[in-house]
Length: 81
Image (cartoon, rainbow, N blue to C red):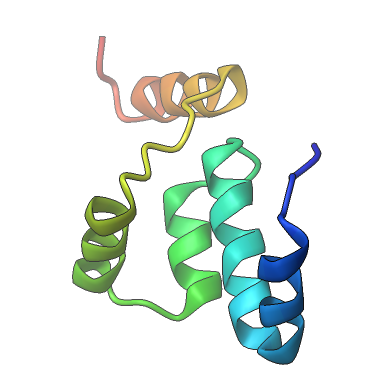
């Protein structure tokens, strides 16, 4: 995965390492490298705060093949059809 970050933005983020980490986590969520739950946990947000951030930033997170397979396995374990 690659991320294009304008140099001015990068300079600002380097001065605030917590913001850089936050942006990386969000980018990983958008690229489907992290689930919403894991991203929320890593950011230390409540469910409501995570939902607010997603709405505010227009985050949609990709729903990849791996996540789909995990959901199917969970449904089967629960006896859902």
